[in-house]
Image (tube, rainbow, N blue to C red; front, side, top):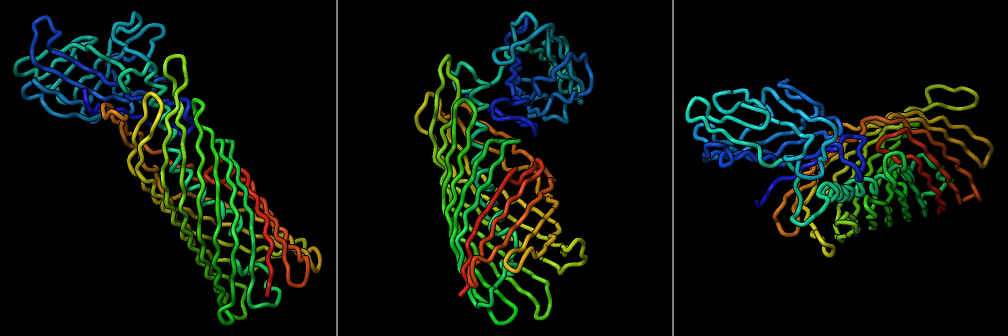
Length: 465
């Protein structure tokens, strides 16, 4: 059947190699009943497979994650039903059931039915039977198929659809690439660096970020820029750079993304104060080349796709003067708010036994940070800065990944994953004057598990003139 929906809902801890929530296609047929009739029902129902337990007519259990059913040929019961239309569920099995293939007919599978809220539409009449339009013609149907979906010919359907989720990494890659310069070279406003008594300053910076707690990601970027004073209170800076990210995916797949970005920053420090108010804007254009791996029988297949991604970020930040001193350190609070828009263009894979096409994705991520910087002059030429900040994501679930296999016979809709809302980041900076007009900056940060890089570092040379 054409256009059968296959959907996956990922738990926060799920990896691309193993999905906890899987959608199955259930088909009920009146033609298989002892007295055949025209009633037919096709349901797409999501199961949290590892947590399925026997249930004898209980309220909808948590391991049912989604549900939609279309009924035809059953009189008044015809129509489409959702999760809210289910009142009770019956599920029975003994031993192990193989959920990677057709469930009906397996010896350990004993029955599955669901009972409607409105029993004049449908209700259960046995472990694998449904009764539709019970007040009218009593259209009995029998469960004839209970299996996951995938392209015709795929021997491991779950593995194929699981591999589709690897394409969802393209969206997160765009966000990660945009975040590296903001977390690294631009994690503090330009006015916080020593101006060395000059009107202008040029710099070159290299950044590195890595994450391994929740995903295997390595990002590098480099940029060059210039800034100059505007009067006594303002500073304007612009920079351009290049960034690269490489990531391993499930089933031997991989993703390589690279592209260019531009940054502009305007800082304001009221004359005679230590307050700094800054506004930063960033635009990045990235190209992601993804080899999506999946199993086909005993062999591994790989389909190739190229996606173009655009990111746009804007950050507003306020840095206050030191409010306390201790041990020679001055403690200054700061707060920032960042919005990042990511758009991943539609693309179609080539090669492999079962390529797929993917629709466009778009999402706006919003993030707030509050922190404290403790700074101390170690010598006339060297300054140490220590930071701790709390990071909170305000946006919700990311964009769904939708598309279809190359034949158009199977569509998929993989729900987006919510970001980890909170994490804490610790870091240090060392500003060291190599000469009267040259400043070396080295910084490094570590983060608790969250959306920030686990580890990041930056080094820059700044020349005043």
